[in-house]
Image (cartoon, rainbow over all chains, first blue to last red; front, top):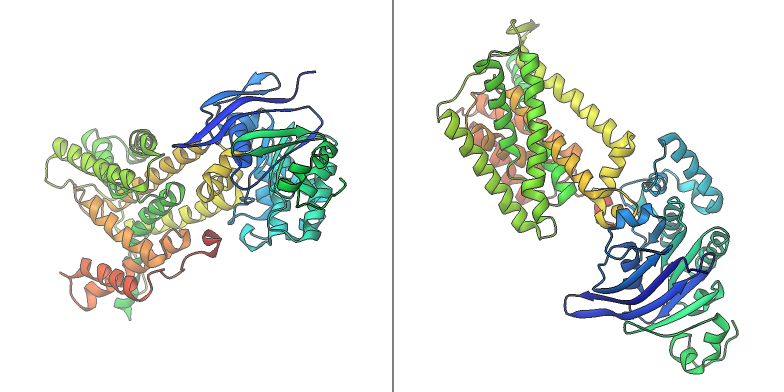
Length: 243
Length: 291
């Protein structure tokens, strides 16, 4: 079976710096795939290359069998890849509902229909329903993350790219976010970037470990946990943990 | 008291012109992070377009008006493609220099065609004005105030109530995120330039019968409008409108009660005072943009 997303030997440079030095990963339709690695390993750059924010220097990105490397972000999101970037990037001067409605800008939908779809989104994110008319800048980190994911889902993506959804959130909020990810996976393929390896792998079918721009390991979550060197370096110290 | 009321009316009328140009400044600044130094030239070019259609060709005013606005929309497109678009990935400095260059080009192109002597454009109405109690309401000033008032309402409706307005706001707040959602950032910026060129053009067309139509009218209006945006709080839409109106009133009162030759000076005196004592302007910097 052809993977939904296939990346081969992807190289991305920022000026002189080579952020990705030949990354190869595959994401099967219906999976949650987690990309692990330390700060600066190239996790976010990988997502930025897929969504068109970073231009690859070489290598291929195939989505549904079609090459998308080098296309702009507007074209890529119309093909069904939605990117929830790091830092949430909720529009500060727009309300929660307006932010969510704009998530469907890749589709042609009447405004009244958009409004209904945004309201329906609050069923998945009940915690932000009460803040529907609050401006983006007034929200807490957890609320911003919920809005960002809800906005990303409004694109009705086949592939959702999630960058560090747990960053800076209290543990109870992190659990709420991951509960949502496990609900999303029923109809959407997810490529998740996480520093929090425990949470990241808990929802994953497959994981990859990135180190200074290269994939050093890939496998099922329990295989990754089983690799002691990797567990020590990336997955939270020497303590043996079961997935 | 009667004089004060009369001055207030005139001041709001001229202030409304500053407000329209200031609004153009603010909208382009918010969308591109660049001050468009050719904004005043939009007003000048539109006034000359009116001279071309209504005076030189003798076409009816309403037709000339529509054609002049269409010409401004076209100028907005050309300006966006020729001045902003090629430099959009650069820092703000090359873009600002380019807008200054465009301003010089526009002014000198008109100079080459019409020469330095000012042109005269008649007012819109047969009746010069109406007497309302102690105040004489000049019909052209009434028109300026009415059009500005309508535009302020339109502007609010457009940016706050329409999806396109929300997309424009999103683009001005975070272009990269807007593009990730599938919003065409270059289209949004194009719309902003067209809208700002039309706003500046409207200001020039409306004020032309009050002033002379001259090459310098653009820079005079732009300097006042720029002062208005700083007084109102740079980047703030409501601030630009309030700042423009306030500036018109201040300079009209200053001219009447203190000194006519220093009329233009009052605007800049207020500007300097604001820069020293309240550089964030009346409305301050919006928290929304800092978050």
